[in-house]
Image (tube, rainbow, N blue to C red):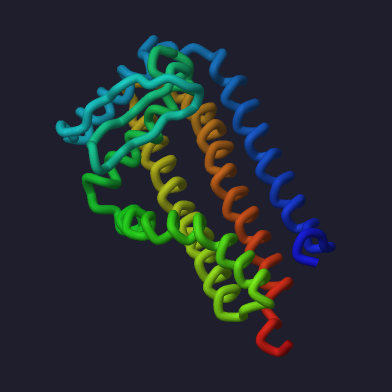
Length: 229
């Protein structure tokens, strides 16, 4: 029952949701990656401009390998832009760079959800790593309820992390759009294009949270009633 059961449909649904979200964001990015901004600035130029305009002088901007591997590290104060973003002058690339700058602004202004997310990262990592081994061990040891429940609780930390991530990502996108709409980088008719790119990107986080929730629901269905066995 543990290795195959009807509840696997929940995992499959989560996988399909994640795949659809990933395909949508890639399709949307590719579409607007062909639209060159009239200002002619690159993603790197846009990031440095936004950081300067936001009064952030302690964040370095670097180019990294990969495609859509852009990220902001609050511990090292480094904003990393992927090859597909750093040197591109497309509205999509500028939007992605602005989104990462949104995280830098959150960090500077002590945005509470971001602080909460950072605080729970260690616990979420440990929980996602140990959850399934604990559940499996509990099953092997004759349905050890304590180990199974600890495993489920550990897995729920991964869901908590993803839920807290949602406001962080949506807020960063709102900040990015507000900055770009203020002028200086994009024209007024280019801002809606960026909004579509960032909305598509945000949906991947929603999809990840839904997928994790479905996996947690499956575990609860399988083992949630073991105390009454």
